[in-house]
Amino acid sequence: MKQFKVMKLIAGMFCSCFCLVVMVSLTQPSRTTTGVEPAVLFFKTQSDSFAIAALQLQTALAAIDKDKPATLANSREALKRCRVHYKKIEFFLAYFFKSSSLIYNAPPKVEIEEPYMEYQEPIGLQVMEGLLFEKEVVAKKEVLLQQADAIASSAKDLHALLHGFQADDKQLLESIRLELIRVITLGITGFDAPLLKSGLAEASASLEAVQYVIQPYLSRGAPQADSVTKYLGGCRQFLQEYQDFDSFDRMTFLTQHMLPLQQYVGLLIKELNLQYNTTGGTINYEAGNIFSPDALNLLAFPRAGTQADSALLALGKQLFFEPGLSGNNKVSCATCHNPALHFTDTLTTSLAFDGQAHVRRNAVSLLYAGFQYEQFWDGRAKSIEEQVRTVINDPKEMNGGESTILSLLQHKPTYTRLFKEAFGQQLDTMTLINQVALPIAAYVRSLNPRNSRFDRYMQGDHTTLTAPEVNGFNLFMGKAQCGTCHFAPLFNGLVPPLYNLTELEVLGTTKTDNLDQPEMDADYGRYDIFQIDFYERAFKTPTVRNASATAPYMHNGSFKTLEAVVEFYNKGGAIGLGLDVHNQTLSALPLNLSKEEVNDIVQFLRTLEDSVATYIPEKK
Image 1 (cartoon, one colour):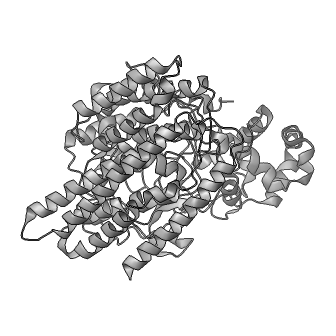
Image 2 (cartoon, rainbow, N blue to C red; image 1 turned 90 degrees about the horizontal axis):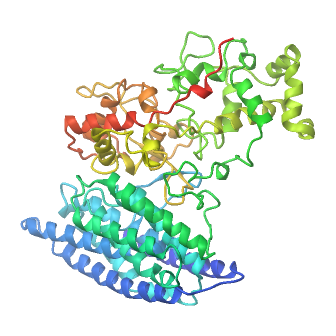
């Protein structure tokens, strides 16, 4: 019955893929197809190899025997080979046939992603990896074989996707651009296969595909062709020479090879006049690379609209510090989000309206808040505007509202003029609460300094980080698996390569940071909003930028130090500590980080601290 469900899902996905092909082909009024035919031929050849690898995986799994440990090792190696073959066609499948790609490489557990929450039965190679590393693998053999059968049977029909297929050079080159981002942010972090630790081999396979597909464009005499060839070759050579996943020097790989490659591929596409952007503008292809400060377009995020003008920002900043928005004329946004404290309040949980009690959760920093698809720890607000309205109206927080705003306007008539300057004639159609929420939200969206030592290093000043800090970055993006939830470049839950989703995770955060006697925290997170099983204890993944200045940590403020936070992950979250969290999305396996490695990760996190001097109001 389970297998039937899986195959039924696959059939539906193939149908949606054909619809996508038709849609894509109809939206292109003019096209050049220099590289399309070679790319299709490459896809056919490599999909045949993937299908063979899938059959070999099926055979290896069928041979698993509890009395023959070598059969388990063989199965893991067969899975690794199958994954590497998949990576050679990923750029094509994920771009032109996105639904089909989910059959092979969907997350191993139900993902909690906003703003588009869709339930999908976990299926594919990532699911199989998890099963192959469980204690009682033999007990999971039937499920493994069902998964393998689903993959093998669909892989042999991949050619069918090409029936009536049409594409052009612009689309093909964008698929390559997105694959480069996958390698940078997911491949070398081990996102797809954290237990197999096959990320480097998979990244190499992805770049092999890039090298083949981009070749026709390099022979057209483009000025950037030599640079693309140089850095692409350098990337592949570096991956082949340094194959140990845990000790891989990601910083050198990125700064000396991969990021220059991304930059020159972008310049090549621009000079060939083959730019194309299907990301809804989220990715700015004019940026040098994904770590450039302008790589992600803030205006593509919820309700951001157009660039806020100076009058709106000035009004928003003034309102942010305005206690007259609260019912007692004492509390402002800055009370819990103090710029001098990197827009937090250093409290375990913030003080409530009465100044005595506390609200339920920790005040997370507002820096980079605009780069999210939901707000609050449980994601209940879908925009910053909604968050502002909620906080102002909440009796436990600011206890304000329309009457309070009206009173403010009466006592401070200069606001009437400022609102008029900011909104013009539109002001007459707006509610009072929106007149306040819109400028405050615009101000919060402007809080994106990107001036940390890490940022300066990534922009070329290699004097700003020490060797332990660089090692901490390498660990963060590799062995410690931090980068598989706190995604580059903002190190929050914004999911690459499209950055069109924000992840919530179930960590099983404990009541205190006493990991020797762990107790479960009573907060059920997003489950209190939607009572769905996989929402239990789910919380937003915040950025770790400025974490060194925003203690205490977690939704409940239960962890006092960064060392304690890293050690919690090192032990495998709640399950690793022996607690029962049935839907934990964090791997329960220990990371086996040494004390020195934990220290280096913490040192790296300190490099993400921005200067916020420009946000601190002058003393009057």
